[in-house]
Length: 102
Image (cartoon, rainbow, N blue to C red; front, side):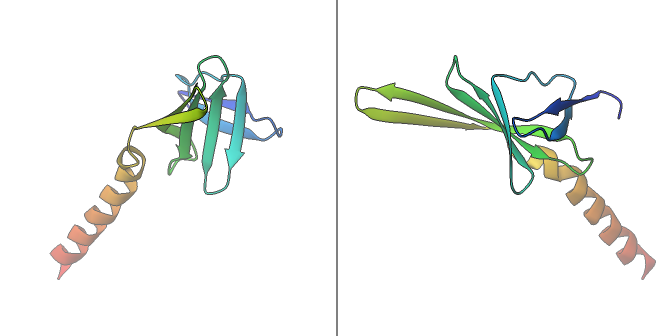
């Protein structure tokens, strides 16, 4: 696929990402078409989800910090709409075409 690259996970699985993807210290594949790209220096975990073209797209970031005896967690979401939108739009277009045919 044009404008994509394949990247190896810690288990030896190969996943497809956009060319802009930068692998950090640990890339892990999870069930439900999710992957975690862990940056050990910053303590952040970049979350990606597979889109309709089998390319893992960014959907959010999890930041962990230790503050004394407490772990602080912050989550930033890129939004799943960016990934699900093409599929949803295609469904809506099919529904419009079907209603036009009646």
